[in-house]
Image 1 (spheres, helix red, strand yellow):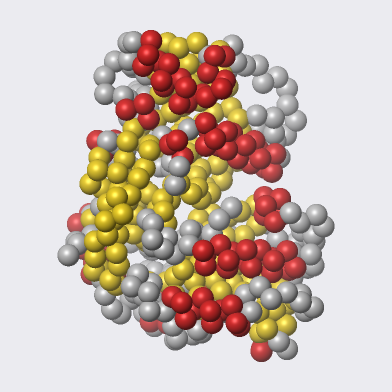
Image 2: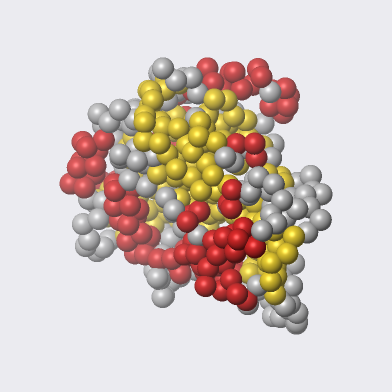
Length: 428
């Protein structure tokens, strides 16, 4: 459970800085935010009101600290991550949080705003007593980043006065160019499969990398699609040529009680941690929970990759496109899609790539309004949809032909409810 974006703000119509994901300051601010969330969730909110986009935009612009998540995080998961034992369950979950320590409008108590898909919850906390996110910490982080080459001054959409289809709380360089440095991304497929796997040595190498110490429990084979298969009595792994790994539980699930989301999430996280411990393909990668969907008696969790660019530049997220399983037209839209019940993981699909950055940085200049206009002009389905932009970002975009590439450059990506639209950035 990591925020996909942390914003430091001097207030409405003033400076806003995006803190690089994965940086030291990112973790300092997120650790501080967790302390405030723990304090807030022990009590009922001071005020609960239906979500209003304009009001939330003002909250985002006004408050010193702003945290965004890629999806709604269920409150049971939040409490588990924050180690909250006792709470008043007035909130179903959260997807965005704003914090104003020592808020002068609330008698210098601490104000915490939590948003889920339906409501805005306001907490006024007095007697917290901690120093996390205090004015000294704010100024320290702000002063160290305000002249950073990559961290430019941004605006919140509501401050522009525009009646565009942008979310009111979207932060972007609306009025000026953004100059940023990025490196190229190198990608290597799992097992470096290029053709049929026939030798015992090849099977052994893949089996060791995928399964580690439990490799001897699985029998190697190959299916009709040329996928390398490892199976035992109650489970099977398949490694496809496009570096997608599929796991399925094939044993008898029996009659089970209704799955609780926290139990399923814990099983999913445990499975991923085991994969990470066994495989070098998870080095230098952070995972962000990007989707949660309830099944008939299971939950499906999706996680996205982000890779450290190095030298204080923070993480850059990855967008995976057109990765499919054989005999299927449905693309995998996340790095890891995992389905779990309260008892076990029953299926996992993982785009397993060894990712590295080459640490040679190149300067890119991009203009948000120009790129939005270009996206609408180049994509007919986008211009015809008349749907609001949901989000945007700078991503490394990977497709199956690039799984063994050393020249993946950053792209500007727009998201709306119909999908994603990417355009490579022009470097100097």
